[in-house]
Image 1 (cartoon, rainbow, N blue to C red):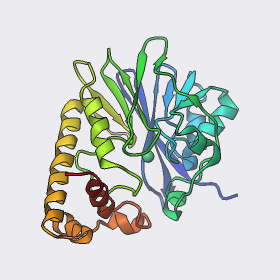
Image 2 (tube, rainbow, N blue to C red; image 1 turned 60 degrees about the vertical axis):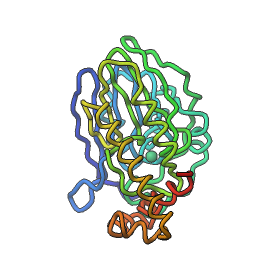
Image 3 (cartoon, protein in one colour; image 1 turned 180 degrees about the vertical axis):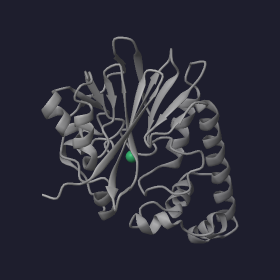
Image 4 (cartoon, helix red, strand yellow; image 1 turned 45 degrees about the vertical axis):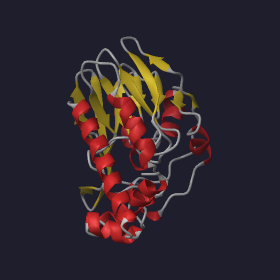
Length: 274
Ligand SMILES: [Zn+2]
């Protein structure tokens, strides 16, 4: 079998080890994904193309449990290998578990960039997860997908956001994403009770002023929704709205087999009453 070339980069933020991983194609990283190890808790496991590198890297590190923020292929890729080698339990939202066990449709671009994850099992995630030194609250945060959770450590103000937050101004989404749910979930994160909020995103970006970033993202999505409904009210169709606001589709739309589009963003907004 062809061995996929992959690379890993690591960094520390306070007590959190950030592991960024990517398939390497033509000598270059293709697309970074991240997982985090904190006090024996592994949050997400990257994609299947990087599973061997990740599990080797983690060989001498303590892992007592895995939590998957959601079932997507770039978050559960090393679960199966970790279960075999380390015998640690994995936890996920109950709606994610059947999709982790039985798989789901992947587009060709997903197979190239991340690979097809081996089926894996998980236990329903409890409301809180305690490690030796920390206590993480599990927050249900649909929007990017069903069965999506964030983990929050109130003493430290750390929040592991999975794919709920990756940038302040998303311009394209997948067809199954829901903007209204996204805004509701972001508001929950915004109201988390801690002095500061540090976001650990699934691309490996750590946002130290997480509160401002989340507030900006909510504001952006609310303003975008007003604009989209306004243009629809004046008679413009979905495609026309995409042209007017975004100047057409981003290159990402064609690179992702038409999955990540601004049209999906506009459609999701129009499904909700203004
Ligand atoms: Zn995802």
